[in-house]
Length: 410
Image (cartoon, helix red, strand yellow):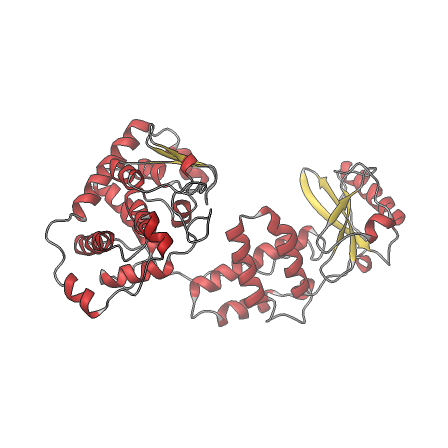
């Protein structure tokens, strides 16, 4: 934890969100809060359960007094006795301040995108609504009213409720609320509309025609088009594709070895169509990424605008990139894949599901990914361009103009 005891001098040098640990009492630490105050805390275990106890704040406690309390509470915890710091020394912060500390401290445990989403939901929907409330004053009625007022957007309402629940659980660990007092508990989530969407044969044909036309016309970046083709033929997530590096590509074993993803490290099996997409991509010296962006040495980051142009050309205005992953899964089922084998291809995070997939043979998964590729290629065949493609090009010409750099790379 630390090679030095906590001193008044060390506490004085703390910056917002910074934590220092004590050498003499394991688990004893001090933290500078977002509002500038300093809290003394103890991380310990009581009957096997991890607890964070707020001992008090600088001003009401000296460093020496806080260390003595930490030592006493740690001793009690080892004996199986629940430590109960005096409440007057543990003031509950305003909710808006708790949100800032939660993002700064707990956010370090989260993946960047998850942290970004939590911050967006809590700062936009929670902190402004309850700006005058302290953490321990928030009631179930308050939360239910907030959730009900967001009923017009059920998915967003549920996501905000999830983020707030996580904040409340974290606040209980810090001693800002009583144990088992999460006000989000017991509030029913809205039923969400199933957003799964699959390409019909005609839709797949139109999308294939649009992508091939743009490849020949060179009116979109070669890397954007290739990224979309790889999503189509691999079922990989958008961010997994856009952040792909050449070192992750194992052509011999027909794999993408991802060191990190939404579900952690994983490998994605590739069929011959996906490999062909990668094989025809130009590599850029000094850039480790497969799909090259406009900034030197960086990857593609956001393809929302080109994707909107592509789906408009294909007359698929509501189609999301993630729907291409759904379509891959649907074709895998059509190819004879079971849900167990499909899970091995798509990389699901549920522990029970993962346990079921664990015994699926690699050979069966390889057969499935190749058969799926064949079905997708057949549905997006090049013969007989979709009726009306030329007329749509005339009515809605693409405005994208490749830069000189992009043309050189292409």
